[in-house]
Image 1 (tube, rainbow, N blue to C red):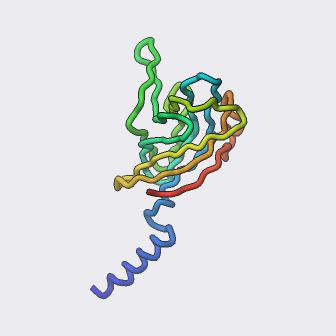
Image 2 (cartoon, one colour):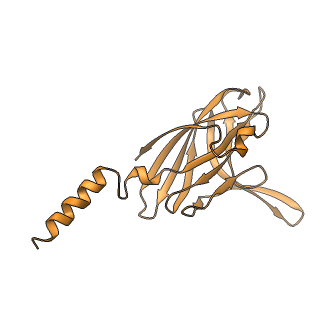
Image 3 (cartoon, rainbow, N blue to C red):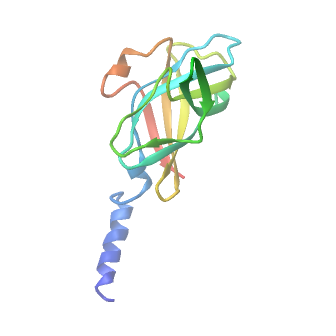
Length: 166
């Protein structure tokens, strides 16, 4: 039993330094993020980006103060009809980019509290769940644009983000 103490101490030290399963390991890389601009009176809009998780995660929610409701949605063809629906989550396989784009999976912001003006930014928080069931939040500031910004095609994209786990 005496040999387990150094291993336990090393594991505790590694966790404290962020080397093992802490919230820091759960942050997703966000590229090409943007929210579609709206006009006064418009009730909803979409948010788009490419997410790459370092470990398998699931996007289980989204929140923003600019809308009454924020959800992960899917658009897909059902016969000849394009259908959109909320999904309870979106798998983010480790190391595999997952696109949230017009006509596919995306963030849906409804009950907009104000018009979203091109050139501004919108605070958005992604809610991620890891394989152990722990939820982590990743706060972003997404640029508002009329169409996908040129930065959406670059490796870094146009998104500011801060991270914190819960």
